[in-house]
View 1 (cartoon, rainbow, N blue to C red):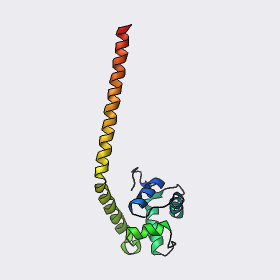
View 2 (cartoon, one colour):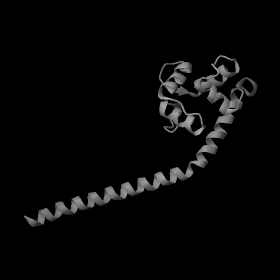
View 3 (cartoon, rainbow, N blue to C red):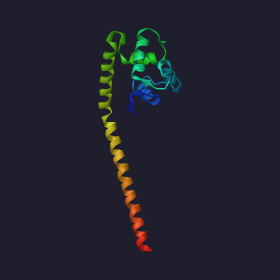
Length: 138
């Protein structure tokens, strides 16, 4: 879910994650989810803060109707039972499964990017040709 590959899950990435997991949240709900576990107040979730969700769920510190509880239930892992390494392995496996599922999306995106590049090259060639033509016309 870390689309930016920066080691954090920001608001939009969390939104996408919750939608893909089948538990969409409002904008305010998402901000509240982040705020509840955001230890360094940077407005995004680090891996440690993400694991904190499951620790709080296991300790009964989350409200039953909160977005974080929904996320914890959807993820089907008990950090207290599995430990941090088990949770890390679980999420890495989930990420791997999702990345293979979104491989088609990545291929489409690459094709679109290639088309944009070709169009830009074509535009530059045309501009260079017009410039050269103007040189000979005067």
